[in-house]
Image (cartoon, rainbow, N blue to C red):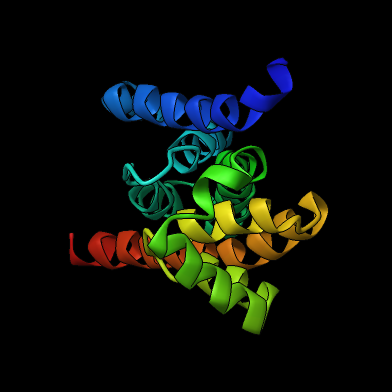
Length: 177
């Protein structure tokens, strides 16, 4: 009997978690004081939101100016990939509910046509559409291991680039001083 409510529970959990993180996003800034662990946690929490934006890119940019940019990018990408599991799980749990949405149908067409490349490209480019791709990946039954690997590779490129920009900016500012 409870099994028929699983899709609703999964979606409600993901949306509830997103709302809690979004409401408390200003409190997560202090996690940056914890170095790489803080960057990882901010990245997990910031990417665990569905639809509601939490600016994680700024954390990687600033972190790249303070710490080793390659490590910052790698840690931020790992955290971001794990955080994206909320969208994936919402899709896996709410398959019947979400398939009726028009925006989901469009993303599903892209995923059916181009497969994991859609996830990879959307993970590289900073954009809010990734949440839809994660939901579709979960609903489509893409294996979680594949999802995580492809998303991590895309986010690795994005966050290393952003961290290197942050590191380069810090060096440039130091030279001006």
